[in-house]
Image (tube, rainbow, N blue to C red; front, side):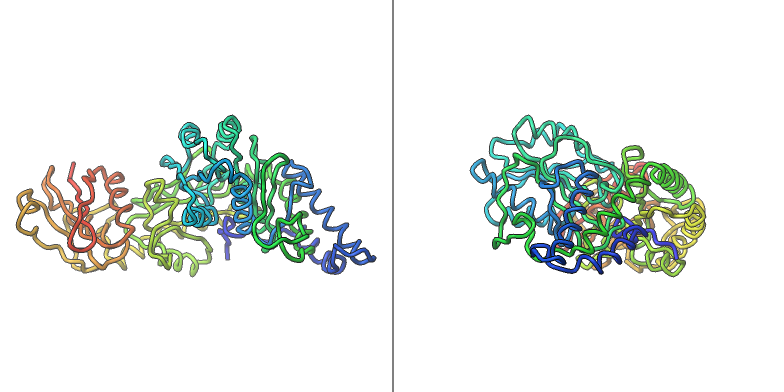
Length: 481
């Protein structure tokens, strides 16, 4: 089995495992007590804090350990907003932040605060000038991830931090995906991370609050971790997190070069091996081990199951893998295809032969799923007008009387059908539409708002826009060629 989902959780590093086992025997006592066992536990906790602070490049007294990276984000945002409440209640986030940031922003807005969401380009990166333009006199805090969790794009943190510093606004950086690869540059004020992302144990997060940053911890007061993380410290896990972080950083330069070559291999070969596939994310400014691509005419859930059966553990941002049936907010913000999305995130030590085997298996998996769905695909690509009588069964109906009929538009009724059926049915009929003519796709699947425009861009057709309909929406496409 090849584990290709390190962006969700990396396997425990061997050094971290050794540290964890040793600390179970030595670090079980209360570090706040003065007896021998307590002092021994305190020494372990302090040593771990100093080790992590050295890697993060902060002071030990600026860093606290939390029960998770999500808790670190919640605590950091809420504490910074409360500490600067006299300045204002305006919060800035990017559109591709981790859900823990966006959920905290939603709560802040529900409580009467204001939130500005800065958009990204098609690579998933914010423009520093756009972020700077969102700053206001009442801005209390800005948040920007160091690198994206889904597509690996590295954000211009140093430039954004400079703009925030000039405006006197603290910047919180979510460094969960990048901290194992190197320190976060720039004059940030707060930083969060999660140990299970770099090969530490789950259940350990860290929060750094730079000296001079106004911060007011929220919730009931607790004497532990400077009042910023309530509860008894999990010292064995903290020690293992520190040991694994130091270990992965010592190996980072060599491993980054190796994994970058492997993911570059995937980026280059997937579009050649799989017709109608789109690779997402910045090709240069990206993390070494993450590559994301989407495939037309397949659903992500089935692809993941088939790859799992073939021995590969990957993840997906497709709406059909989510209980909410909405596409990834990251892919949506980027404006790229979400259907049939696969995220490959290689853990350190991944053998090159595993990647080669994945590239061998993937084309057959995608072709098999497309065949089951009746997608109009041949070896050369899409059969625009040909219908083979199999597959989704979404009916093509004549245009109703009125404006659509006057325009000579065909209508595809994909109401009640989930991704990728609306796009499959669009591909089936586009060849029946004269050049310059239009087809209206009726759909109530949220993913259609993203995937139909993305299909048009990939296939060289024109997406005219979305129109209201009795049910769902009508997505109007004009045939260009």
